[in-house]
Length: 298
Image 1 (cartoon, rainbow, N blue to C red):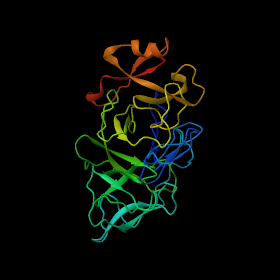
Image 2 (cartoon, rainbow, N blue to C red):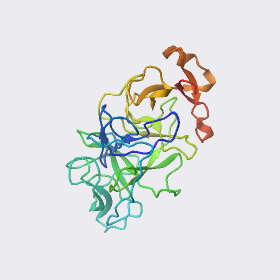
Image 3 (tube, rainbow, N blue to C red):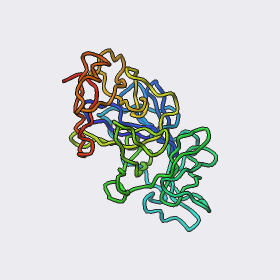
Image 4 (tube, rainbow, N blue to C red):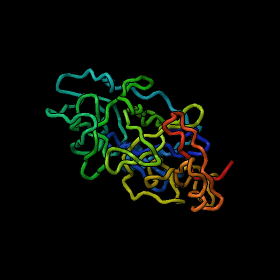
């Protein structure tokens, strides 16, 4: 499962299901990332996967601490395996949570980063069609198909332009972390290049704000406005999972609400509930300076 800690005073669930390395989520707040990884940030249940694949995992809140991840036999972004092998996350079972990082058989005719890909046997087998230095992030868990995404060195600048290095599984103890270059996006227009993928918050900054990245959707039906949520990608496209005290009538730890345009004012939010206003997301990049979220004023 893939998850990350939510520091934003508005956002609760910034974990996602990450398909391909392991992970899945369910509406009860439990998730295992892999999409997909799954990580939940404070619900009764899970985390997202980027993973948007599906099994159950333990929820984590903003006070969670994580031990150093176990070392593997290779480094994902260095990939010093043999010529017919590639470094990849591996899971013994189809639980979408990596057990180790190891050298696995590489494809003879690999798909390149950004291209469609396939996974053999099961999600987490480490046998995919992507080139060395990339993994297949699944968006079809049954068909085992998705898109190749490059590994990256956390804190480095090795991702292509307009992509963010997002580390998944970082809140899970004794689980290898998987840093991937994920496409940046605008949540107001949901402009992800991969059909069906959704634009959600990425890892928050120290100040609590975040940018936005494209991830695969959850394996289950997305949630509508006001529905309880625990993972960042559980809400429908154009919606975001926020803490309950920023929404009226939210009976869970967090619920889905809508993004909004600051330049268009409060009317769209008030149409959802008269008490809502368009609150500045305060994203660090000027490209997202118009992004707001429909929430109760503090």
